[in-house]
Image (cartoon, rainbow, N blue to C red; front, top):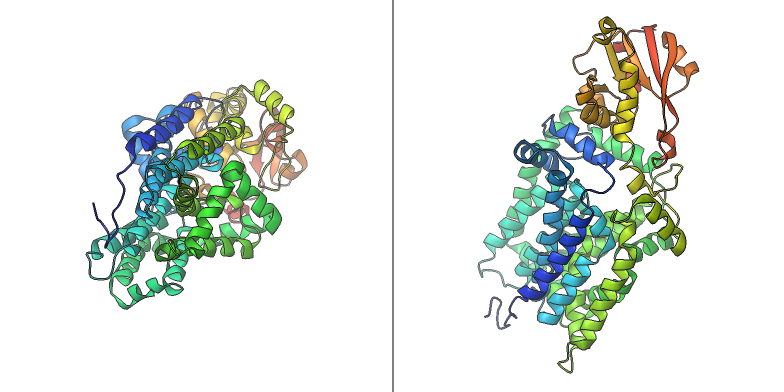
Length: 518
């Protein structure tokens, strides 16, 4: 078959690709019910009950999808985690197809699929529902379409591919604004390589126009709401996330994609940027380089933000390794390397997938000398934050409900639950509904835009904070119950549910100053 001028493409190694995708899906399924709802999953469910063209902390695509998905399949843990599982498996297929488009045969496709399936950061991001699994999928699909385009000459039926790329970029932007980095890298790749001849045609400009039109509803929402995401990003980078100097940033990238896989993706980057064979696809390497440069210059960007850009590097690495390891036509060198990838991933899998009970996880981490971590400026407990944030939510809602039940029935109708962050608010909304609690009032991120949610409370159950601070606002502040949990983030445990009465200042006057976009 000759889908490109003068260069036959290998058959798709469906048996190897399907095997890698199925093993990856099996690992995700093994952990699908472990621990509990992740903080962000609860928030996504809350947002899905408020469909809109945008949210303070993200564009709407993943939330609108979730709104439709849960209407059909419900909001159980299994139902919630099937979409990211399927997207993760799809990324493996896309990367194998990309390796084929770059000139790779069975070995290249198999190695690329194996490396994608074994990437710890992608395993972790596919274990729960969020925009991240969609983001990785859109970057991989865009890379495949770009490779298809780069493998054609102008006038050879490229219009359809460019238009599809525009749709993918537009949908990607409607999912996560960081796809702007992909667009910038794509443009830089065209300008800085012989592929710049495409810029003399209408196709890339039409693709950009389509992407812009698809993104326009969210831009209009941002403008109508005072550009809240810009405020969110500024506050988050300055006050929430830890800084990652270049050495730490690079160390994280090595760990994110499996130390054993580092030679493969580095070889892929070199193959794209410096080899004669990869010259035609050099723009793909420049997408990664441009994204890397943007994040490093930023200084406060989380290393995980670079992870979607690795798709072409894994595919190109499969091609480079095929030509290096497969010279004698033996598959054993590639097979041994793939086995090393799998073994290393098996060792680190408990750190990204909740495959072990908490006591066993803690013992395993201690045996390997791995300490709990967080990318935020917060005190850490016995568990890393991505696990700690899967615990305590039903118990927290029950603690608040226990205080709610002590109130006279006449008081409950005029009582609101006030919490300070979106995780707590979403837990009250999700678990508290069955306990009789009203919707949470919270000043954090999109909850601030929802305000008092139709309530005119006279009594507040305030979760956390000190009596002295609340006494400046209320006439009466009495303790109700204390929430504790051994596995949650330390700032969530040991917090009192206060029964606060008699506002000294009207709530409408207090509310604007409570806003917290971070």
